[in-house]
Image (cartoon, rainbow, N blue to C red):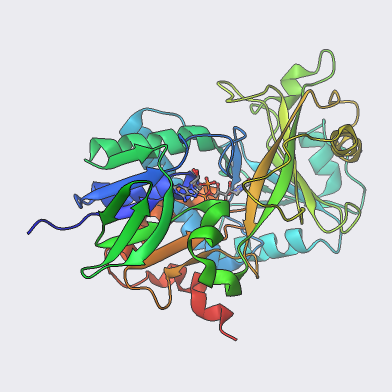
Length: 386
Ligand SMILES: Cc1cc2nc3c(=O)[nH]c(=O)nc-3n(C[C@H](O)[C@H](O)[C@H](O)COP(=O)(O)OP(=O)(O)OC[C@H]3O[C@@H](n4cnc5c(N)ncnc54)[C@H](O)[C@@H]3O)c2cc1C
């Protein structure tokens, strides 16, 4: 009897990496997406995602980040596509900045190459930045950004090359329990599987409503792009400007601004991409308002211009994108309790894409019935019990 394939439901940032990881192992695998990835209606678009190893969110992510850097390089050599640019990442914050404190601690604990920088030195090395005198910096020179659209396309290319079947424009409606394993119900089709990996991003709750204890709340986020002011184009280029993150201790509400410099071969709009990592409005992923109010883009420009004085024109482009927030803002990667052969990888809470190649391997392990790797056990469902 031929072995039923593993089915990956959702081929965005994380699902495409999981599909490639399963396919590389020579196991029959089918990937399904309701849209045509890479697309701009989920969480994996906008031309760039910051990647760094000195992780303030939780030090247990550091080994995964290290593995992810290698995974991106491997993907580049497999496909010849450029996914990763190591322009460095500069974090800056005041004396009470948790982002700075926790990043410094992760760097020290894990021996990550990172420099602590005094404000005078920061202004001298990156003259486009002006920070208050009580701010410090942390510069991680090997960090930078990855390009999600290229990453998704590259992972799908590798998966295809290793024999994966990819079905796009097909929606998974339900996952049922069959006699020999889970059965995926799509429009007009019933597909038997040896295991199902659900990587449906903001739509995960629709397919697995029982995961409500983890929350998995879709939120709408805004990103904007700003060109440089006249004659200052070279200062916003990745050869001079690192990716950056500013934590001004509550001045911007409960969140931080971040930016990715302009760069050669940029995917999407030109200029510096700016986002705000913090709470956003909860949304139904089927009904997202894609209009962006002028006052929102103006606020991004005004807030950031205090740190990059006179450097940026007002935003010439804006877009929306979805976060899927878990209850504690850490990822949810596990077998689904009470369902045989179903694995979930969701709740990436606005910081998951950098890890895609590393997570793809660990999600593939779970799909193949292997034990969860020790470095992702902290992301399991058991933490939500009670
Ligand atoms: C503005 C913004 C900035 C971010 N910045 C960073 C950053 O700097 N660094 C970082 O590491 N991360 C960042 N993130 C987070 C990161 O991008 C996400 O964590 C990651 O892309 C999530 O990928 P995903 O595969 O879960 O979701 P998606 O990429 O959205 O993929 C889900 C896929 O599932 C498909 N699907 C859904 N339902 C079904 C169904 N029923 N049947 C078939 N297919 C289905 C969808 O069509 C979609 O293609 C950011 C996110 C946003 C929005």
